[in-house]
Picture 1 (cartoon, one colour):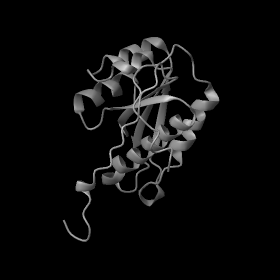
Picture 2 (cartoon, rainbow, N blue to C red):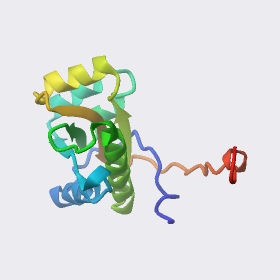
Picture 3 (cartoon, rainbow, N blue to C red):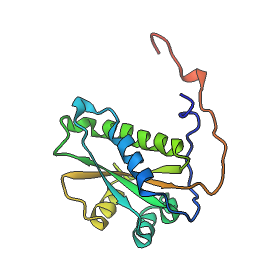
Picture 4 (cartoon, rainbow, N blue to C red):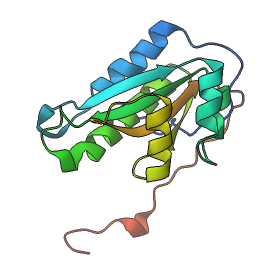
Length: 166
């Protein structure tokens, strides 16, 4: 459980490439996530070219960290693989969290950039990366070696916990 309490959003990265085997570990962790009916409806696009990272960083105002990350992992929901379409967001959310936790384990910094369900964001990403219609661009996860060490803020709030009834 300590890994959960070490994870934080990191938006600034050193100019140092993350090795391919570490990126593969992140993808393996993502694919280990639970999914509705064990459909595993995810696919990934790994982006490392500077011009592509820059283009994605300009797709919305909160996407700026993408430009200087070592890699971007674009998570996609494959509608042809999903057994319960309405659950695909939960499946991809679990997948994303696994990637973020593995990034923490590897000593990387990472941040999850939201794209789905905001239509103008997803359409830009879909067009730019030539994503087929049967796949939903869910998010972009920026990963890299952290440029600074920030503190993790504990978020537990007892007032939000209810027992038996609200």
